[in-house]
Length: 321
Image 1 (cartoon, rainbow, N blue to C red):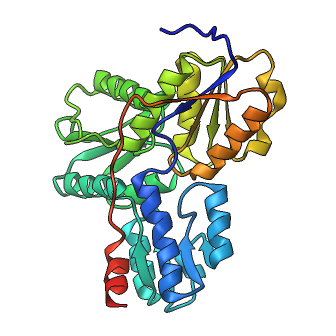
Image 2: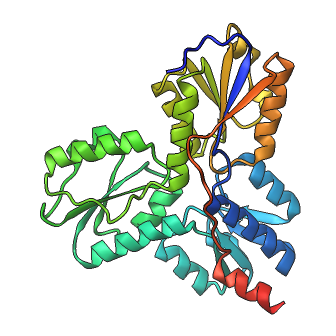
Image 3: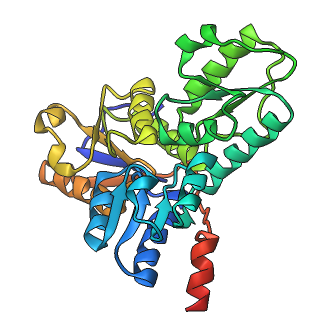
């Protein structure tokens, strides 16, 4: 492992970082909807968990609401990248809303897995964080079959009907290591627990965690750009601390960096959550350069080239125009 004793003050920037394909798809969907239909376009919940992105879209004419009953009848509503339950779809239909479903395709995959296993009468253990929008959406696909497992402490409280018909699924934005540990603990209790047909934790979450592990091992400080309500961003802070960084902090903007964090530091690692635009990372690098961290190296342990098409409802209207 490379020692943490470089001769110059430097910044190690993780790659991949920032926008994943699902976030890019969701944000572009709102932008294209505003261009196609004009303002306002309503969005249920934050389209992605990032303060700057939400403010930028609001300035363009997007109106963010908590629930569909806040949207005037007949208007357009975009469902966020985190997905919604069937109940929400039905509420929108009853109000005559025109919907654009910007749910990340990888979240949709988990929804489909939940429906399929529920149809086969499996108990489903959903590993995730209580109250997170993605968990609420997935749970809504099969509420009578799904139990939430929120961390290791909740493993002992799981109750099931038939251990031979038991499967686990997970929120897509979790820590890979923590999920592996939770599954191992569950299998100690339930040896017949079935794995999902494919890994539920999304490629982008995993890739960003792989990259931050590499920079954390060489950095005294790791700065993660992301919002407090972003699960994947908060996991990056935890991973950085677990893999060698002496300190790690989550910031929305460069202005939130405390100069005291930089005292005695020779290497700063920088990364960003999957819902963070690159301009916010650039501002952090500019801030660090003003404090003597002018030497910047990009660390790319994994390549990432995934792209997703826009929601089909929007593509149809764009083709027709």
